[in-house]
Amino acid sequence: MQSKVANPGLAAAGRLKIEWAEARMPVLMALRARYGESKPLRGMRIAGCLHVTKETAVLVRTLRAAGAEVSWSGCNPLSTQDEVAAALAAEGTSIYAWHGMSTEEFYWCIDKTLELKPTLTLDDGADLIFRVHNKFPELAQGIVGGTEETTTGVHRLRAMATDGALRYPVYAVNDAETKWDFDNVYGTGQSSLDGILRATSVLVAGKNFVVAGFGHCGRGCAMRARGLGANVIVTEIKATAALKAVLEGYRVLPMDEAAKLGDIFITATGMKDVIVERHFASMRDGAIVCNTGHYDCEINLKDLARLSGERTRELRPNCDEHLLADGRRIYVLAKGRLVNLAAAEGHPSEVMDMSFANQFLALKALAESKGALQAKVYELPAAQDQELAALKLKTMGLGIDVLTPEQVKYLDAYAEGT
Ligand code: RBV
Image (cartoon, rainbow, N blue to C red; front, side, top):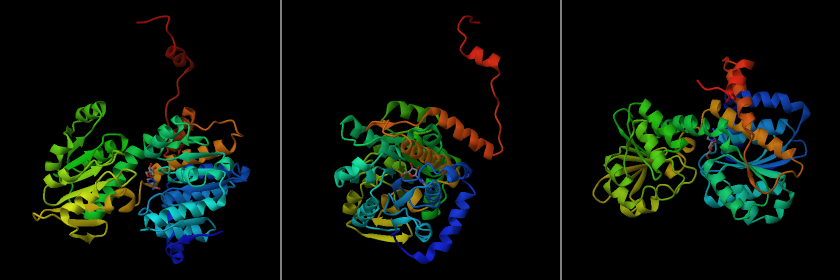
């Protein structure tokens, strides 16, 4: 077992964080208990590339308890929780991750995990699977399949599959209802506001809060910002999404207009160049700008550096001030990287519980697939969502109703109308 972390001495603190998460992830813990004996992942070697957080540690422990050998890296240079990485290394997981790494180190870490010669890959943003395809294609033949955690990654993998470039089957974990309709909305909503608050401590009430993109993540951010009393403005490129935002009661504007009004901006689009030079040029003094999309390309920081002549200072942790020629100040949080993971702790454990239960079951399905799957992007079975949601409700002490046989008959009846 090999690893490289920031400070192995942080392991004890990391264990406490993981313990806190385990107490809030009952569904994943139930899977650990259920499969700890039968070990359906025995013989599997899993290379994972996903934010090294306390919740991810609960997943890693569960994969190992089910018999897998694991080698891990983070999927973002700023999202690793160093205590957690130290704790995982101390208990024998091969892990290469530390907070604040360079891009070069980021890829070095991924390449180290591939030395395991994985039979399964787990991605968040598809960087690992791209690495296999582009740099180590010879590894693909030994890989049974992979999983992908996030919207951006699934989008790209689907494009690869359409082009016939994908070499092995991938489960789109993101597309499970118990993932996207919870993690992306409530997880992103809460953790993004959490990141903004930790980095700035500003009052949100009464502020003009601009959300770029009204997908699931943007919807969560808008909802939580409104809950704190902000005037939410939404920008969109898709007519139906914009219309939904309008009917939710948000103001919808093009970014060119919103840029002049916003006090706080958050991008949640998955697209590059959402906030560029002309937007910075029209922003108010003191505007706060951040991103919660997977990649750090949504805010064009090169444009901002040009405008500020690089007159930049770190005013607070995760909060850089950029001074423009006319004296206006613009604050960028977490260097334009995922604000919820870089400036806070990522999504809360309760919501990652279901996302990572889906990850676990997807990897188990691949391990048991015995070559039955093709090199395509697959969705998880819808019935699994109902099972996971039912289990989650049970752990919350909540019950639901059951249809009577008469009602079931009524559901599909077409012989009679009114
Ligand atoms: N995400 N993980 C965490 N606490 O471990 N928080 C967020 C955590 C994942 C989330 O599932 C999302 O799809 C992805 O990070 C974006 O990179």
